[in-house]
Length: 413
Image (cartoon, rainbow, N blue to C red; front, side):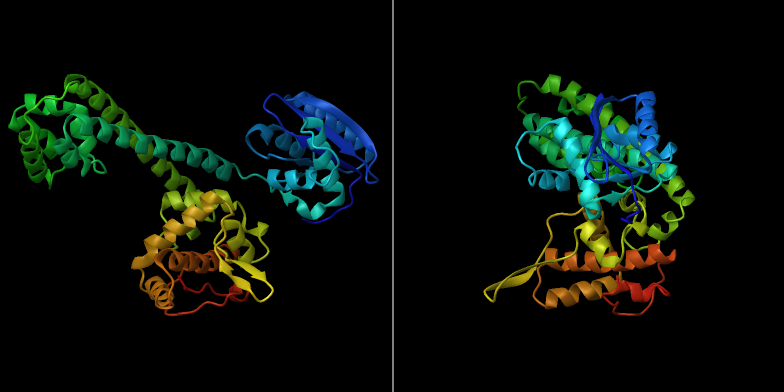
């Protein structure tokens, strides 16, 4: 981050109900150290008092969630704001004497790091309302995705315990509307057995107009494969029906979120750019948008690749150990989005050619996919830097230094 001259360095160790703030002068003199309630007026009062000493830099260890209010108040008060990641703060704290872990000590470490180690700080850009809104929606969508997966697994587990043959049949349809739709209507094996074939056909036709006949034939065949009634089958019907209805509600909510994602992406200038990249759908585009936040945060394409966790890391010790290893760190959500989009774009001829070349070099599937994700991060950086949509070309290679491609986005993915 840039290094303007500050007269006060205020470190805030944020908390759920209260924070602790320590302010230091450039020479290290302690100006204040106080508990700071999660209250706008008290936070504003502190910043106003510190402004008497001159220009103030406020540094927090959590810029969102519990730290969102101090950041918003500081920005409204015209105070510069920065972010010291928690892992960096803990490593810096190890350099100070003592091993205690208190809010006051953490706030002092944050303030002193801002004073003596400005390069460890990250800039907090002006928050874009659209991006922050998408961040909330993306978090909610991730929760719903986990809940959807849990419900599917639970339904299949209950079915397996009472009727394995029916579980094998219905389980193949759980990713389609027909699977949970029929379960929500009829429940488990007793519910399917109690209805006529005509009723089953009509319900299946409503959910799967093309495959309903095949599906109902398989269900009837599965029901005939087991004559014994497992204890608890009658109660399983109620559990399965209830879980299936919840699953349908979750999927309905996710469909509504997908519509909001597409609408909001259309409003943001980077949205259409991200959506133009092969293998990037609306959910992947939203993840990339909110995690990258602003491409100006990254000096070059390499910095973006490191942040995304797709850049290799060199291990070398004399002449005995050396090599390139995959990075285990990085932003996990952005890394997953990069991997998924790289996998999805294997149908693209240029991406497939590059992937096959890496496989021919001896790399396994995962390693070749990571190489493709790294290559696509270069393209992504160039697109966002130039404000240009993806343009298919026959170009087979892209320079490793993407800064040289600012005038034209090349298709290497």
